[in-house]
Length: 117
Image (cartoon, rainbow, N blue to C red):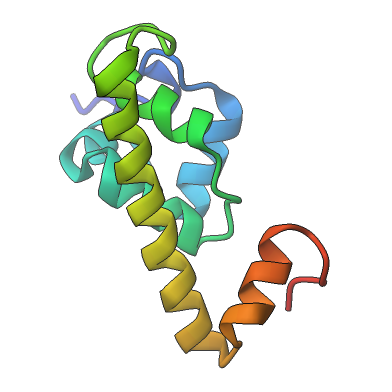
């Protein structure tokens, strides 16, 4: 008898909205998310259209460690911020290459000044 895989929302801190975003990115189970790890998974979320947000990334990292979303501080949180910034920057560089947008277009889009294409 086969059982259905655990949903993404079975991971601490991750609810239905993250589960839906993961599904759009092709991440369909908690095991798939664990196998990818938070950095690769978050890059996939961004590539699938999720707007990057540090708290979302942070909650995912903490959840995958079985910890409450607000459980780290100081140097650990700063290191997570650095990882998030690198993931976001790489995604923006990839977006510019794919869409032929200039870095200025991407920056204006990021702050909501121009409409996404």
